[in-house]
Length: 304
Figure 1 (cartoon, one colour):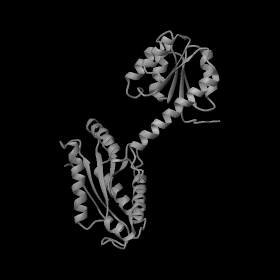
Figure 2 (cartoon, helix red, strand yellow):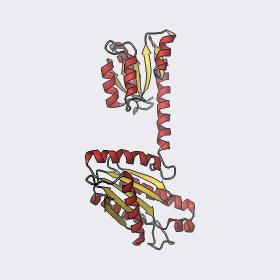
Figure 3 (cartoon, one colour):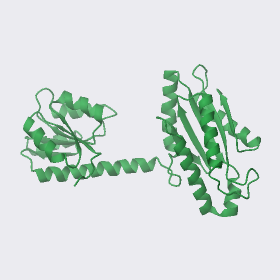
Figure 4 (cartoon, helix red, strand yellow):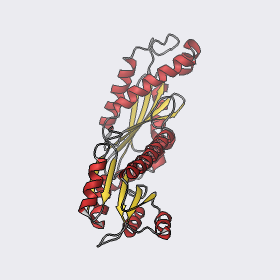
């Protein structure tokens, strides 16, 4: 059947037979992890970030309730779906587990068909939630990150750069004479051109932490952690050349016979005193200078 081998299920039970039965039951459809006590459960949940945990309530060193409490207390594990599996069959036991934040409660001895159905149901909810989260962070036209997602990542990377002392580069990219392109070829053609530019920008951001995002209209943002000015400028220049190399006809442009872009960039100097907003303003100012100088070029600056 192989529903989704990429989804991970952690089975946490101090009974070896239960672990083996549940593990064999789930292995054909999911990646299965096993834990025999509460400490192992917390460690493996933090390391592997499973999509779902089947959690025994009665374990000797740390019961399932305490494991759940600790999981919910850590940001990285707080949203993992939990199904309690327990020999405690009183309604108040089930109600207590659900009140603590469990997604479901299965009573032992469990029925394998019921377990599979409930696991499949909760993992479907996980997939749908993640899809909605992804859509909330994606620009619908270009499929790049949207401004909301960029702001989140930019804030994280700025804080990381300040702590690590590593440079952080930011670039603003603007399609030259895009209004004239739309006027000449129509908005559907403009959308196709914007998507082509976005694909090129996304392809240029391949290193860990790098991000291409749509700022608005025909402007894109490029965020490059651990990247000095020379490297950032080189990436932006290669992207500018790649977009011109797409050879998208633009007969209405006063810059070139093909679609081109202008780029302004700035690099945060960890030894400096600039603020987060100033790096953005510097990149925007460099973009303005690139346009004033004739467009289809990259301008860059270190510091505010």
